[in-house]
Image 1 (cartoon, rainbow, N blue to C red):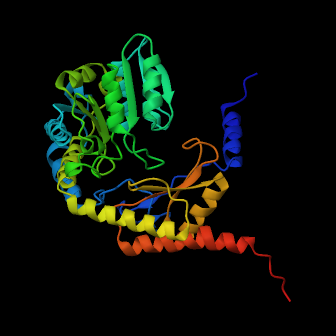
Image 2: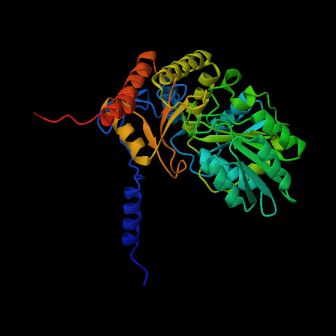
Length: 402
């Protein structure tokens, strides 16, 4: 006899709690900036992807409000019906210009973009060769496409080349994140592009965590590496991180983008994003492109954090990006550290499986251009208290009361 759905779900939740993997949404009051009110507590936010500090930028809010008065709050249909507004068209043109491609296509979310693009271009008999630490949306896109999926060792171009060469028949797509979301390191993009070209494979890069932070005018890691559309035919990125808005896009040659538009199910069967949101994203793109001062400030903060963490002996990762994880191992260790930081006024997420591999739970610290040096120094002091002083105290024999 089939058990009730409620009983089944209770058992699953009990297992998640027992493994220290239970997640809880925090209620954020007000704007999502470098300081926030989370569950009623004011704290410094070091777990946001708002790398340029634009999510609470008044100019974006004004653009959103002004546009909503003109174009309303909803698109009311999919893009291929009546949902494609002039604001969407202008945003796509500006995105294409930013990343140096002929054309761009906007999706509602980064997940929808990655799933839609891969499943639109590949099918049974084709092959996807994917980095072991690629984002879940890239993995799911490969699964939904029906293509054979091949995983190469993380950031290992030689292994990628071997996996690609072993693919038999069909179209082949080599796909990678640029900056990896949980480790903060960067893929060897030039090497991967060269081997894809040498083997006649397509190359796609999800530049979600590189766009706005790296490259000329913040055009991303792909632009920083000097990869044009011949070398990297597909560039994907989100608008909800450095751009400070929401949505995502894919950019490439005009015929490639048109083929995706005609066949991507996650776009065809979804209502288009609100046009006023596209207007806000346009303002975010403009500010990101002109944001060299923000980028320089962000890089100084990254260097300051890394220098301080190394001086404290903390396990810093090999990352030059705003993502600075401290791998602690057990789920309980990451949770305890996160709770200790929150008690001191710093919000840092405890990242646990299945987001990361078992035994690699971590604090995922993210720096933004909205932070200042005092906030970074305060975080370092809190980390010292939570990860170093508390460990030393725990190792000492307990004092007996007289």
